Image (tube, rainbow, N blue to C red; front, side, top):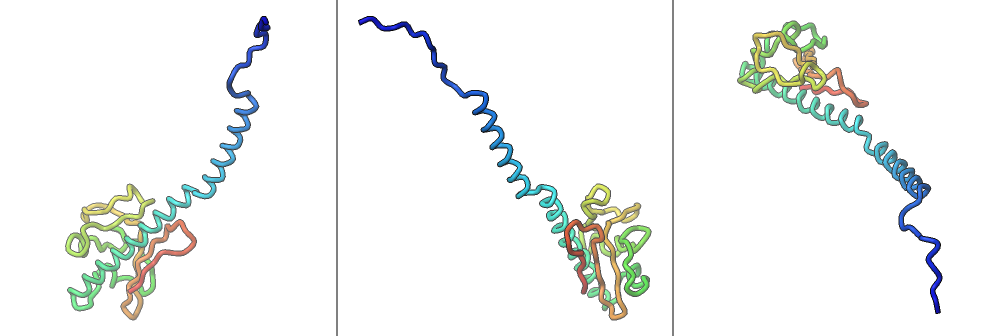
Length: 157
């Protein structure tokens, strides 16, 4: 028996419709994952965590200074009006020379302030992006006014 010639050749592969359906499904899954992860929110949370840590570092350094000086706060803080938050900078509450390097290796700088690197040179212009205040009872509050989350960042002792 003679075989019939192979008139219809069947190619193996995907059709254009199949490829478009798969690409569409992948795009939907990718968008769901991006919404769930939300990189902008993650970066904001990381910055706020850094701010909380740095506020605590500054407050600990001020506390150590006061402990070594029989409860007296650095002059730049005690000269502030009660409960008035003032920027920690060379033009505001200039506490750099009092704290660096004896109580803290460098003054931290807010991640969105300048370069975000810590300040080690106290004789030059600087701005940490953080604020400091004290009340009539002698409690000191350090805060981060540029927080990105829902709750303000401050610490009081």
